[in-house]
Image (cartoon, rainbow, N blue to C red):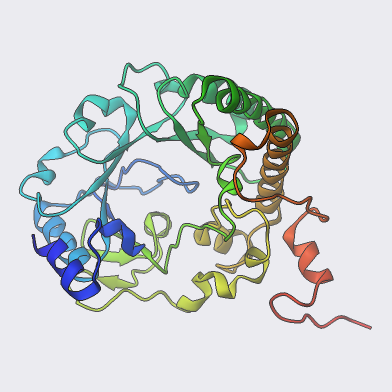
Length: 348
């Protein structure tokens, strides 16, 4: 097949295209399913037609992007899958369409509170959208969802303020206790991105929007991510061009130009460029409340690891140690440590 032949002959890659680290998200509808912390909020009924899909897939193959179909949250169009067997496509869609998802060789179901009881088959991993205003029920919802999956990626939606952080930590602690039992008693190491991911990731992991991740809209415009399209940003490229997409000040989307994030021990943090820009005016500077939430998650992860070390022995331990972080946010650490990033001028 053309896709894999080019990967092998030009890049020497024999695995699937996901190993290139690049993803191209095809937004199949303005009503696309929310799968990240920025809710889908496009006002419209526009849908991507089969011709644009084919052009986007060809573009992804040419630039070695792994294509991802982000389906309509109310009415997925599976006819767009026809005739695309030469591509390995990942599908993101609402869990209410779990039966239709079985047609896909690679799919991720998106759950919310209303979909916890659907009788889908067991999933390797899934996404759970939780509203920050209803965080008091988080642990109950997550533990119920773990009956259907081995890994949960949590999206916290509408998190705008610092309120409820202590309540959130209490809910995370309950999830941590469930995970401890899962790891040490049942022999099934369940994964929860807000607690277990940081145990295995020494380097910060972020969404790569504007660097290795881009999104295609219904008309073929390329955006730094689906959230940038939803917010009404200008496109940074087009599938009708053979050029790679390039965001304005693209270097700022990289970790090298994020002095707060690259020194932060919370390597699991999403680091959403769109949310950053909305709150701080900079794509590489997070809002304070986002950092406080990430550090709360980090602290629960650290306690989880310490409990494993103390009570379960070394058989269950990941390879990373989590030290106590001496400051409330990475910003405080930054201004007190001039060895990282760049030096800040201090007033005398």
